[in-house]
Length: 215
Image 1 (cartoon, helix red, strand yellow):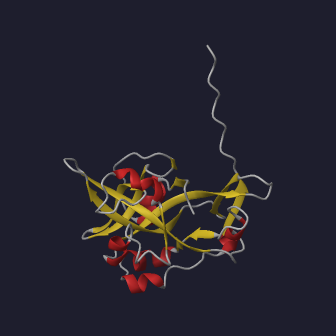
Image 2: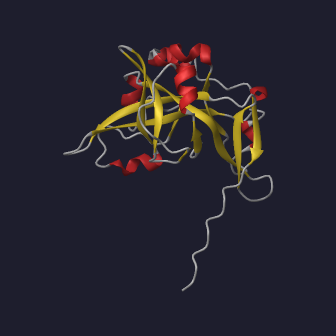
């Protein structure tokens, strides 16, 4: 699962994804935060701000985004939260600089940073949805697709002992267009593990929050 990541830079999105960025976004992203995603449009690729955590059309409010940030590839076509986006082939690229996962090697959860070995940005596979809030503007949201990683040399070391290991799906640059324009059936063939040798993982504990000063 990916609950925390660092968004891809403006330069990466412009230079490598061919989409302009006309909005600000936080460097570090958590569920319900706004972050950039790249969609296929009639005039080429477009970068849009979207909420991390997909909000299905039937949702009563946007709070569901805090539990829909990842979509399991095995069940995405059937789960009520995701099936509309999947069946409508609403696929997007999520630009990342890195993402974070917990390692329990020390006996407690320690945040680790996973990034491309060459230090560059990369994209993961996502699905997007539009939710129309009553009396307000529509909200664009997204979820990252995940696959089983029990046998993955890099991703298999994360998450609590005894839990299934999961991984986001890195979309190689030569498959960006394939993903954005895939059919649901075709998208299945693009959901595979990334090359462990092309990524590195290092401990990167979350900074402790400053203690409040007693008065």
